[in-house]
Image (cartoon, rainbow, N blue to C red; front, side, top):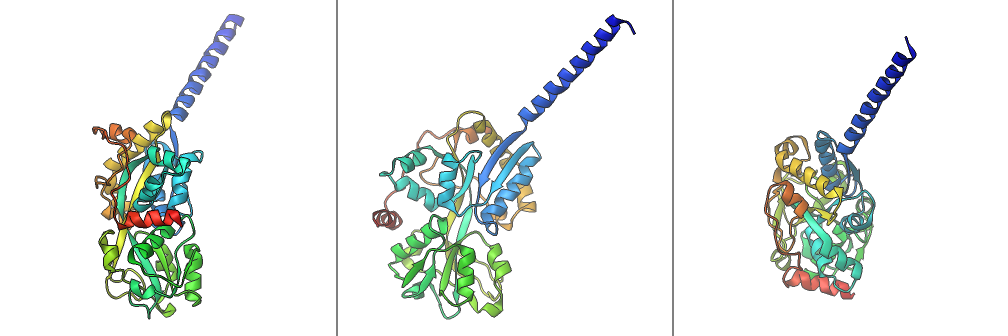
Length: 335
């Protein structure tokens, strides 16, 4: 081979390598990376995150799923934690954040927090000793209300404020620890806000434990939280449906600009188009997801509406109107 031919071959090889590197770089660029913060690994939020991870992997989005201690941590994480563009949060936690006007950080979070989708109603699970017949019977009892900062913690405190039922002690521990304390007889009941079936209860509670899911029918509570029902046979030793109340689980993001906006929109479009796949292959709670359910006071992220081909709402998020739940939030802020 002549020197000229050899030089030409080297140039050709270099050119091919250059094209290959360019193609590889383009492929890497086209694959997106997002993060979602959820909840405890035995809870519904975390399972939803894993379902979304499987779905969007098919379109080249690598979705990291992070466990957390609950909704309030999630709001802060979406605001400030790197590579965490989305979170699952209870709607009453959104209302709580919107109400806080004295804290400049929370005020900024409320202004920039955006709805990706409403998801489903989360049932308020109240598990206790079989001698406790209903929510009002929690007066003068020791009740676990979830770890401080969790959505369960906030909702449980709001329920006690709204109903004016006063337990002897509200014990701020996480759900795994609460179940252990309940089984040991050191507390009387525990709250857990999550869509049924809750893995912690299906795997960790048996009839021999002498525990039962307790109805929540207090009139003051049911006036402002939607009524719900946990079907018969959902948990061990539960032969009948149990009346309770619910809060809406929501998928949120922060008002990011840059490339994250397009990726969140792409994820939302994929979820909207493939909801039947999630219903078939994901957590049973996907069956009750309504992506178009109205959530008063919170607008959908314009990165999402654009991807879905919808007209963006022009109104900004604002605190919901006054009602006893909001009054209870104000009281909590003053405590």
